Length: 374
Image 1 (spheres, one colour):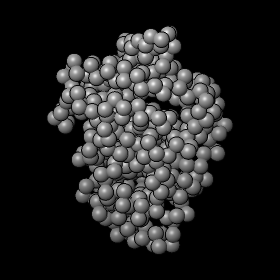
Image 2 (tube, rainbow, N blue to C red):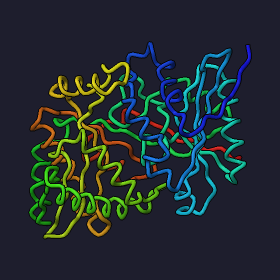
Image 3 (tube, rainbow, N blue to C red):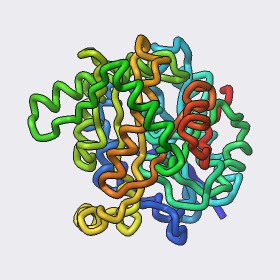
């Protein structure tokens, strides 16, 4: 049986996207992506990520049937920021066959090496600011919004080509009843009064105020995460691209800016877990997706805390804990009792300690990034 690896033109993405359905047709936990969103994400003219990056898609076919796929990615902004020559892989899917995985990685590695890269890292889809990491622990349920999902054997395939763990990313499950104690409520009140905190919700209706708040969010995000492992600042176009997408599914009450004595101190971006609705949208179509979002949104019982940031000068003040309390209270007001805080770098000791000891979160899923020298 002959195996071939075919390089696709970057504008010929639909077959690459639809191939994903072949690998999950019998998996009850897989959440099909929206085809429209995937096409926009991979479109070199529509996604501003590709103004500073490039990508090559590969399909593995055996006797005319797709048996795997991978993308090789060069993120110039990453390499400028970190002064290195790291290439990336992403969108990896493969049957349980090491020879197929090896052939896919060989093609991706050759392309990256030919473009001057000395390391391959991933999975990122297509960057650390997007869905990233390989699920290696916690396969007992569907992924939450904008988190990855894959079969357990993918780790064996990736490690089988010589990739080694680079960094783990943690996801914590938060239950309102576990941290909303009388003691925590008293602490919340003390920190709020001491720092004169105001929690200001985003204004999604007024386009001028929305643009102002997006600019504030962009500033805090880039400042708060600047020293994190692998961090690359969003460009203005990238952040606006993301904000426009998230606006379609966000609950304005779950996105807010924190002010301390009139100064911007931090922010929180949480989203209702619309994957609980989209898991029923088996073909990834727009109309059926909209139908499931409309009819099942009131049953959503979890929100994902995607980004919670405090500016450096306001750290160690307890403000981060009050943000978790505030988002928990706001979520509870719409019937959401569960939260996922993700993802958190394993090396972020302060955040991991706070989520475990203060918020009594359960670390229930682990995602892994791999490196391999080229």
